[in-house]
Image (tube, rainbow, N blue to C red; front, side, top):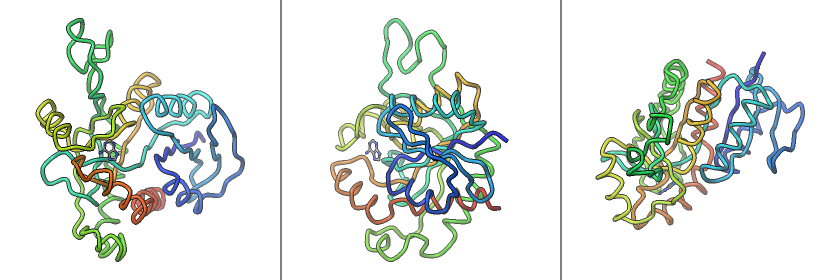
Length: 247
Ligand code: ADE
């Protein structure tokens, strides 16, 4: 059977998944370690992505072409943009867009030139099963532990919709407001998802992008981001992927 490509954005996240994985071999390629094995009985390839669109594109391409992955699932953190998208919430992307793509006036703003495409849709069937797993994790009281409660994370919810990506950490209120004005339906911003989406589209691979909100992409974003990834780190993604593969 062809493996599922599981891409983690953070070292902590990958470590939590690897701890549960029966690894057969580690293949080093393009400066990355691809962990080939089984997770809860499913053939998987687990890999740390690196940061930014190029890192995501390289990783996704290798998973599809070299390792023969039949679908790609990306997990990581994101900055919340939409009102009500709070730290600790989970965002499941229905579609993704590269907010820093701009070849205007030759092509419409955000369109990938010569493709006629600016938004890439994630896979409906993958989303359905992942959303079920996310709800099971979020419904568990205190799922993030006492440290998360100390950060003010209490009743996390699931959001589904547009996630935007670009090679920029959004860490001030003005940058966040600009993105919200340009793309009012964007729920969250990160730095890889829409690049993975473009590669998955080119390779005709179903894919999904799951993000836990680490900050509000505002003036406090860098502080919140570092506290959150230290405290909550990989817990949500590892638990969600665990439920998704088991149930
Ligand atoms: N990933 C997590 N928080 C982010 C932010 N504020 N901007 C870009 N990527 C992020």
